[in-house]
Image 1 (cartoon, rainbow, N blue to C red):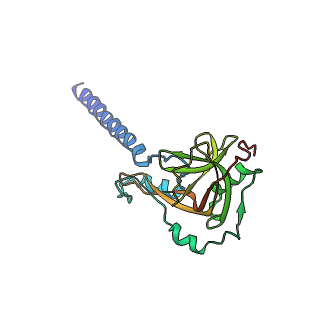
Image 2 (cartoon, rainbow, N blue to C red; image 1 turned 90 degrees about the vertical axis):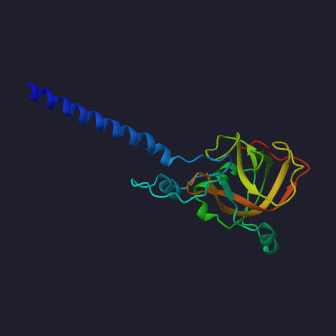
Length: 209
């Protein structure tokens, strides 16, 4: 009888120890795969997500400790060779949202192409600048607008967010956002702006497609 009781107690202790270990593994797994999202047009690639999750052995993470954004192209240098007379994509009033969505979904088809797009100027988090219009829900867009990020070296401090109507001419590019804490980078897409012009009158501010 005593042996049976001792055997039962041993089995219970082993089960309790196993449950405790299982709980610890599950509580740390989400943290390994998490990566803070950045406002604006930034999107994580599947490759980045896989790398961030790491392997079961806890492989070393490759990103910097401080959060940062890498816009790898030199605007002033690229402006010298940019031909404003040869624009690949002119985004008009029709299919405005459709075109922007396709940039996000099939960026490899558009990388390096020149583009002209008009819309409201907007800024988020005091540093991420966008051009866009009001319209239907856009899965990749920001702040209730159908929009796309641009990066400029011009002084655009005189522009008023969600009020100034602008024309952005530039090149579609890919950058990298580093969330910090050693996490790997995530891809995001933007326009390397060769020029940002404030227009005297707003165009069609609400689009339907």
